[in-house]
Length: 220
Image (tube, one colour):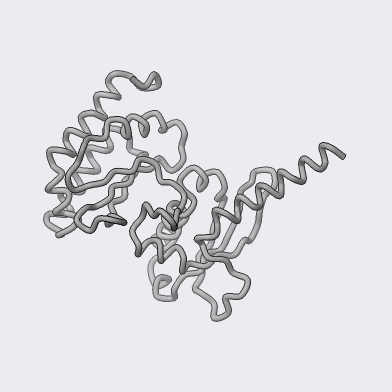
C-alpha cells in the first residue's frame, strides 16, 4: 500500500481499472473504429477524474503491435500526483487491446515507446534556443513546424507544440526545464536549427556546462 494514499484513494484507482477492464473492448472500438467515440471517451474521462482531474491520458497507435493501442497517463511532472501515478502503475491489470505506460518518458529512438508518426513529427520539427536561465535551468525556445500545421488556432497550435515537448523530454524534464516556447513556420533556411529530437541531449549539455563552471569557481 502506498503510504501517501488513503484506502479510499487506492480503492478509487482499483475501481478505475475495474471499469476500464469491463469496457476495454468498447474503448478500443471507439479509438480504432470510431464507434461511439464521443460517448465512450466521455465516460473514460469521467472515471479518470475520480482518480484525479489533473492526470491526463493520451491514446495512440502501438509502436510495435498494430493490433493494439497504447494508453499513456501523465501528471505533467507534478510530484504531488506521483503517489497516484505509482498506484495506477502498480494496479495496472492485464489487458487484451491496450498497452499501458504510466509517466511519459524521454524520447528513445532506438527503443521507441511512441508511434512512428509521432516520432517522425518530433524529428522533423526544428527548434532554436532563445534563452537559458543558468539559475533555474529553464529555457525559452522557438519551435518551427510545417506551414500547414500553422494554419490552426493559436491555442490548439500551442497545445500541439506542448505535447511534442512532453513526448520529447518526458514529463519530468519538460516541467523542470521548459519555461516558455513560441511557434513559427519553418523557414526556408534551417541552418543553425536543431531537430526537436536533439533537445534532451542539448539540455543535458547546457546543465553539464553550467555545473562544470560552478565546479571551476568552487576550486579556483
